[in-house]
Image (cartoon, rainbow, N blue to C red; front, side, top):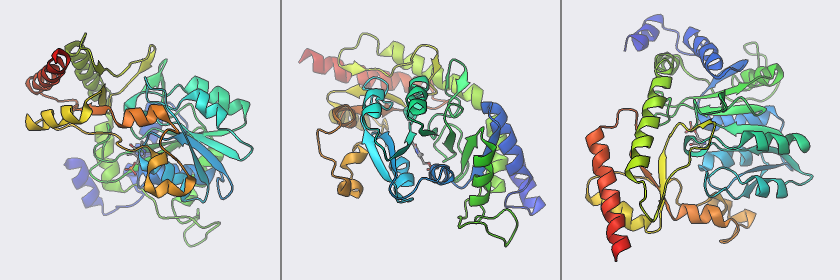
Length: 353
Ligand SMILES: *Cc1c(COP(=O)(O)O)cnc(C)c1O
């Protein structure tokens, strides 16, 4: 509250001291040179590709099992999204399918750290480097996630974060960030976010208006100080779920790969009778969600690309079986016990039948 009042008193609402301080603090938190505050995670993906000069005739490979914003960023530039399947255990882009999808037109790869689980960045970077491709990490769900202590967002050429309120680091409205170690790309994004110019009323290229505002930056600066603590709490909640579901046949638990830190933006299980389980939980007053019920290659918005059922079987199977259970840093242990009990009851009754 005092942080917000400070902004209101200052009268400086756009690209002021809180935005630049937050950019510095966020870059430092990740261990990267440049951070540029933007209006949303969607804009961050879009401007990252724009800074890489992705455009008509280009192909960008991404996972078919993501939020549509990942693909929209490609389409809005006139480039073609090439959807590939996932690894059924981690939900990350399937690196074999990724390598097979590379053509002479491929310009970039967008791995998504879905649910807060780091995608296999070492392998993805190996493939990208071998084929001279740029990598844009979609870190909208993975702030704070790491591989061998190195943060997601610091492996690729340029990376996109979202501060949508429900994300692990959420603003009180929309917000996003691009991070990169490349000074040239950072400078280009700074220009693109402010109508394509570095000096007011002088424009080197056609840009957009995509700025993080001071009030959001002030809120995010305060929340960033608690992020590590909140992440530890989320991991603790996930560990309690894992223990509660141990040995339960018919439920697949999320995987926490060795030497990686999953930040559990979602705690997502898989269940054969997912819809019935979700209904049972809803009847017990337990809210759950399905991220995502339809892979991108089957969305009507992408019908023109010719995707058909059966193209990406792991993603399609995930879409019909994933269920995200309640998780937050301050989830009440008694509420969590009720969730575990309800999932166990449903599954044991089903297994007995
Ligand atoms: C939330 C999200 C986005 C978009 O972020 P916004 O800030 O809502 O625009 C992009 N990709 C993924 C995977 C997301 O979860």
